[in-house]
Amino acid sequence: MIEPVVLSGTPLLVAALLIGILIGMTLVKAGLASRRAILGALQLKNGNAITTMLAALLIGIVLFFAARNSGAVEVHTHTGYFWASILGGALCGVGLLFAGMTPLTAIAALGSGKLQSLLVLAGMALALPVVGSVSDALSKTLYRWDMALNDPPEPELFFAVDNPALYLAGVLIVLIVLVHFTIGDKPQEEK
Amino acid sequence: MNWNFLNAKWPFFLTGPLLALLIVLSLALFNDNIGLSESLTAVSEYCDDAVANRELPDAPEMDWRNLLLLGILIGAVIAAAAGKTFHLEFGDDDGSAVGKMLKPILRGIGGGFLVMLGIQLAGDSVWGATAAAVQLAPGGWIFLIAMALAGGVPAILISQRGAGKQPTAGTRESTQKNKNKNTGKKK
Image (cartoon, rainbow over all chains, first blue to last red; front, side):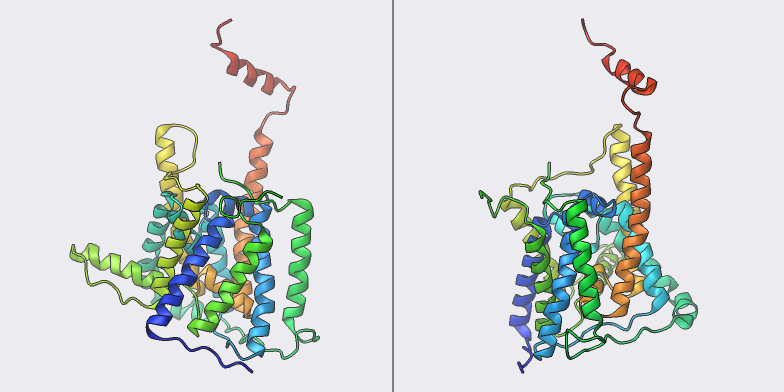
């Protein structure tokens, strides 16, 4: 078993900066740091963006399983709530339809010179006080009658019947192959 | 195969696994949830204080989440510069000058507002939800699927509606459209 690496102080900050740089570079090189790319993915026209996300989930599931079983990493998730996740995801999806950017891709888009990402980030900043002001109402309604979701499972074997990761990986592989043979996944160059 | 690594866009079998590796590496090194909503909240509160007090307050504590955001910005600049795709641009609309300015403003601010509203309701950013999904958290998967459906279905419908409005070649509409296009051309 590997001992988890525990960083603190300056090494932690340096690691965060380096990983951030790699994330930013990867998002730009994947073509995800643009409104056109995200909209193309939503419209099922940009296969490269879709397969990038699907491949990230697929490889991530396998990598995380291996890392967790070796002791190198532990599970770190918030407690999820069913209706909050659905409503939040739906609102986010509708917002993506207009903005074409998530917080991460908006920052990456800003780095690649797309100034409209400033507007998206401004809109995001405006939402925070609104959520703060209605959080009391949400605590009395949505979060009270919502049901907490189970903690993530921690299976010991990957190829086991009770391991959801196995089924998810299978579905993701099928989706990647489907996108490859229908939409195509050639990286799209910017004009 | 002549493929310039720095200039060209990278294929999905490179970028997907890279993102996956970075997610797992982040979880291992930071030993914490890697969602960005907390650092975005901190930056927003900083901006709120600056506007309210009309002066720049002390910079927020530089923790690993803020440096991750800074790193993403720097990385994007490096990649865009290396690929010679860095150019300042605002909006991508055709049409009138007013439309070119107004549409991106309404779309950007409105869309960004809804994205963050959704993130705050769900309790995690898209990046955080992806990391949660990788860890098999049900909430992460529910969030991502709801996001894909709520954004994708209208996007496809709008796209098909727009395609349906284009006149078919050889019809009266397309002939009239071509006629209007040629008006004013000198013989």
